[in-house]
Length: 108
Length: 118
Image (cartoon, rainbow over all chains, first blue to last red):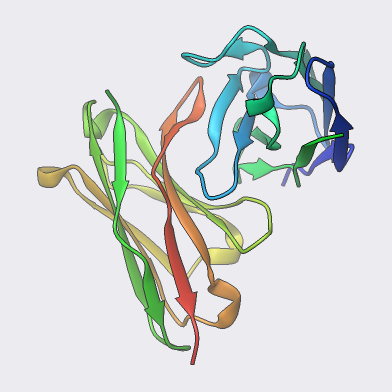
């Protein structure tokens, strides 16, 4: 099983600032099958990034993903009020699918 | 437009079973896997398994083998997740999600809260 470790656990930032979230995997992720999700309270996760760096349909370009192998990053270039949420990474290249424990982006 | 609509909240007693449905629309149901993921209160996401609606083939996380059963009815584009021998630790929101080979789990249902309480 591939273990995903996200850091930091919580990120306290102000609107307009840049957010950088990290996801490290215990083994190399096949074909960069690494995704990022945003989840707000009471809502289902929403796919932001797939294939490590491709934005899902309708996702603003302030969200970008990068990385390969075992080291991946989600960057939010300028935080909007609606971006404060919990973010999860997921690898879907091998079974079982696994998720990181999440990073909470909160308003400073 | 892709939609996954799940059945409503359930309250069950310990030892009982629960069956959650997930009705798909807006795409060919048999062309994409359906995954099941759960989230305990205040916790992260846990993958349970998937079904290939075309063949009926399934794959479960080791933790859930022998304990969860995922089925489908292609005539009504609906997948089901059946979890048996419930305990309080199974109290969670259960999500279904469409599985795409390249994109992973791209569309998600709204979630179904299952509460296990005596």
